[in-house]
Image (cartoon, rainbow, N blue to C red; front, side, top):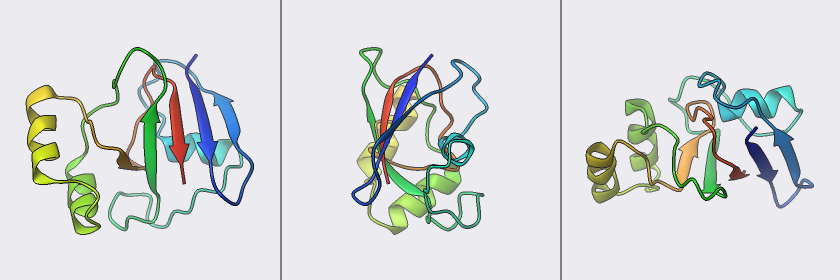
Length: 116
């Protein structure tokens, strides 16, 4: 099972053992299910309220799916992703972006640190 550690400067770190390979649970859903107070608003990837910084901790490397089109728009708006990173993602079919939207990032089988 992948471990997801949620970290915040104002809340104690919490590690959650998530269901491996569900490929349907977003980081936001996991946070809500475990009473982790990540801010959110629209839950549809359009507002940017649930923006989080993600670090892959497992030695499997980046496995999360590519950014959604909505994420790309919001992250570009907030200057959290460059055009070069977007182009590389489209070639590699894997996101190397450190910033993601918790409502769009679907957990796979990697251990993550999620800073909110």
